[in-house]
Length: 293
Image 1 (cartoon, rainbow, N blue to C red):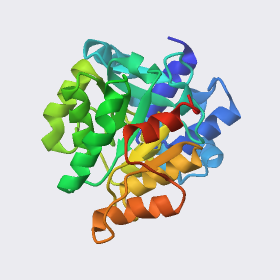
Image 2: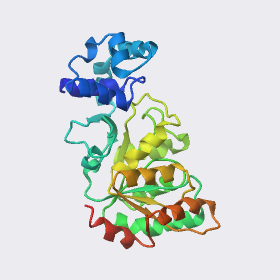
Image 3: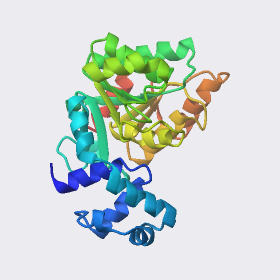
Image 4: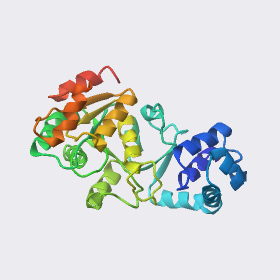
């Protein structure tokens, strides 16, 4: 393992360090050569932090036993894929703020699947929503599309389960670490995905999910694929945020229309008004995706 890779992974294990601060450190020294030599006062000035937070970062860098942790991950079949690695997904590499490190459990080769689609939606789908999901996505699974979603209840869960039932492949992107699967009700599903598909997170395995992790997680869901399908969503929901991030990333957004009387259709219908492609069949997506492969 290169010195820079290990330092990136070490920083990913420091709860007080965020994406922007790692970016600043890399701008200062692209090899992170002086990472362990910075004093708290130097970190405070360089990263524009309080001295308390700078002290915490220095302490984490001194006390987190990163090599022992990596040995533990090897025993648990947890892989660390850094932005420096060939295994890192190329589409994700080109978003505005790509994760520095991805923690992976399962088939890392799925990160380079030739065909993939992100699927997001409400945690409280109607029978129409789940039927529409199956109608649109099932034929794509038979064309070896990999489904990417977020392991949430509702549409996310249904998308993962549909892929599994159809003997296809799926990637679940988590809003926390592998040791803290959320929601707890999907722990068995997470275990199945880790064994036969791929669990993915930018958060170290010990990190617990927090509400601000999920919007950050959503940029990975949209960033891994050329297109995102929104099945049912309220306005200002997590699914709506994911679709917005997909647009910002220059990716395609597809939306299944719904009744104007259903709250779960407000977000998807609004996305269509804003330019998302209205889809009624799998072909509406696959025809479009031919031009963005």
